[in-house]
Image 1 (cartoon, helix red, strand yellow):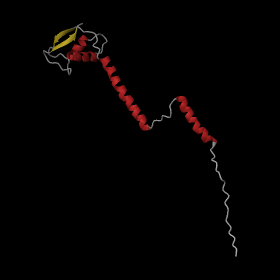
Image 2 (cartoon, one colour):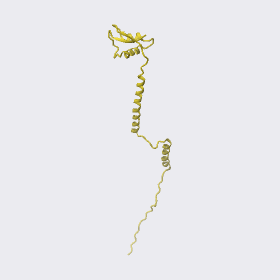
Image 3 (cartoon, one colour):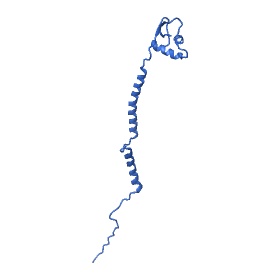
Image 4 (spheres, one colour):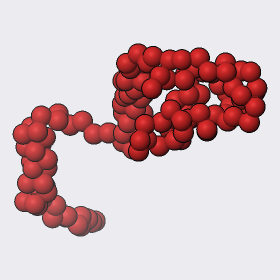
Length: 136
């Protein structure tokens, strides 16, 4: 007795080809051309990287700004001729400042200058205290 065996056959192509859409291929080419034109070489900073770069720039610039400010503040200015005044009863630094102020000069600025000149911590004066005043 003879038996027949039937085997089903599958129609499978021997080779599969990949289909790449045209826009994907051009989208990949565009950034590399842009990076090449800008010379970035694929460098991208994350948010953390940008914060670090900003912090480093700030750390370098702040001390430089401080050095520039001190250089301007250290100018001694022109020498001032002074006279020694002995404080009388009832005299205040404000009265003395009004007396030595130039016409149109703010008395508050003169008080500050007198405090600096005499190295005073406040505007309070005592009777008999010697105070340096600019000469007229």
